[in-house]
Length: 274
Image (cartoon, rainbow, N blue to C red; front, side, top):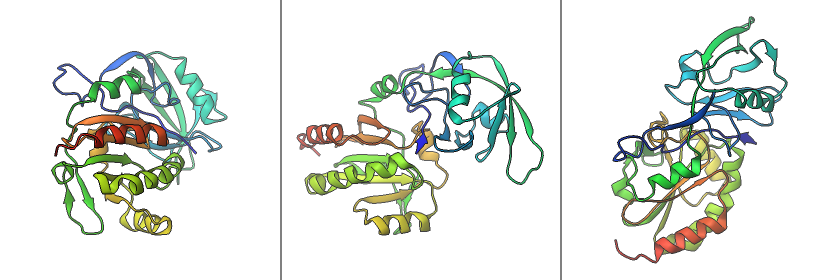
């Protein structure tokens, strides 16, 4: 299981571009529980015995400070850390602008590394941000269909109700969403619902996973995770539901709730205009 952290589609000034970051009061390194999203995305494994960084958002302060995926944070300001939860608890007590010193262990390096990091403001709550992008056309896709190698654009999907899920094979909440996605596909694909899963993982890994579980919906590869970055996705799974005109109708975080997704899809399919 993962703690999935991050922000999505943060709205900025000017409001004509709803795909930029805005920040609220408070601060954090970028790791927190889902209900308290932070300034950018760091994924920590909740079941890991130590706070190991699974992924960082490109270009963020944590990455610029020298942190890398795979680093294990052993100390915060000289105090040892016993678990991911302890790291999150201590960071949540701090404010934007404060400087912290992290001691990390890095693979293939015998000596610990000290990293200085200035905390930034945390973003608005995920739900508030998601509500502000509803009705907007999302950024263009930069993905390929790994079965054909062809690029896929939003225009290729317009006319259908489209559910885009950003996911990964290693993400437990993503895997837990699969039965619900399968149910939606079987119930509504003939009526105009298209489901696509987007991951940055290698083609062979996705193909083997899809074949083993007989996934019935389309999988696309975002090799550089650039589409996810433009969509401001820093937590997996995140699912974006588009209406037939290609506008954002709903955003779902964490494991997909079938009742909520079904109600939203049913509502959009009633609009038969293409």
